[in-house]
Length: 276
Image (tube, rainbow, N blue to C red; front, side):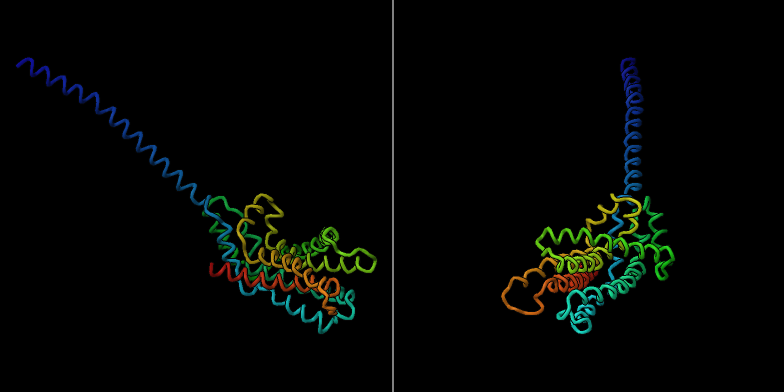
């Protein structure tokens, strides 16, 4: 009897020694899992892409540049570009600047680019900023108008690099063609670069890294830029053909290709953002 009692005492003492270790291990695992869940819950709003929501939100039928096609028609009907290319390029440039100013305001009103394209620090800040843009999206502020004016001037200045690119890719160089190349560069810069600058103006002013990260996802305005540049590139193809047409004169096909390509890019961007 004494032996059995001592054996039972040993078993009870062994169980008491083992159970605290098991409890401590289970408590540690519970703490680790709870901390992992807390970290995942805090990290999930940060890692969620903010550009995708803004790009889908930014897709609008109003952002399709229908005025580009109206300007193409005016080049032939009103400015008579076939008779005097240089004069038509200059006169249509004035109308393009006026229309692009209105288009820049339309981009700001529709997409709210000055506020929705910034990367928020948390989901709460993100929802607050989206709600603020919904309130202020209908009326552009004086700062928006000032920035659009500055971006127009920057786009005209950046027509000089476009001029250099045209020359490097084989544009004719002579006193007769240099002024045409300069006017063409101004058209290309206003048609492709200006909408891009308006849409991404917050990133340009604050953080270039955010700009490059947001460019990974195509949106309607970015496709307009790519479409205009591709249209200018393909506009070179009809020039060397021996058709002897008036519209094959330099740089009519490049100019029309830029307008048409940017317009098609706006349509494709709208369809892509809305339905895909």
